[in-house]
Image (cartoon, rainbow, N blue to C red; front, side, top):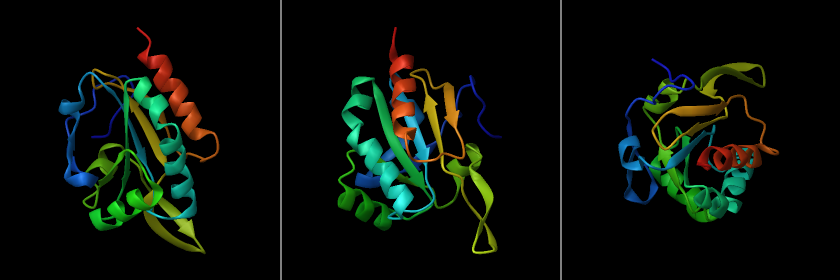
Length: 157
C-alpha cells in the first residue's frame, strides 16, 4: 500500500544517523520533509543535501523537520552527513520499507543497463501526519526552495 495525497501516512519506524530511530508518531505537531535520493556522496545527491543544509534554519522556522533517505547503510550515511555538515538526520532504508511505502523504486537505465533504483522524490507531511505534497522525478536546481515555500505556506495558521 503506497501513500496518497491528503491521506494519513501509515506509521513507520526507521534507523537514522546519530543512533536515532525515527517514527512518525514522535514527530506529531511538526511538519516533516522526507527526501529520497539514490546514493550517498554522488554529485546530484550531494548538491541536493547541501540545499537542505543551507536552508535548514528556514525549515526549522517553519516547524519542519527534514530527513534524507536512501538505501545506503549507516556507516556510509554517517560519513556523508559528517563530510557535508548536514544538520539533519539521514535514514537508512536497506530493506526498502520506506521506498515501498512511498513508491519511489523505479526501473532506471545507466549506460544501457537497466536496474531498479530510487527515483529522486520528496514528500511533505503536515503536523497531523497527513501527506500534503509530493515531488517525483525531482531535478535538483530550485527544488529545495520549492519545498521550503510549500512548508512555509503549510505552517501558516
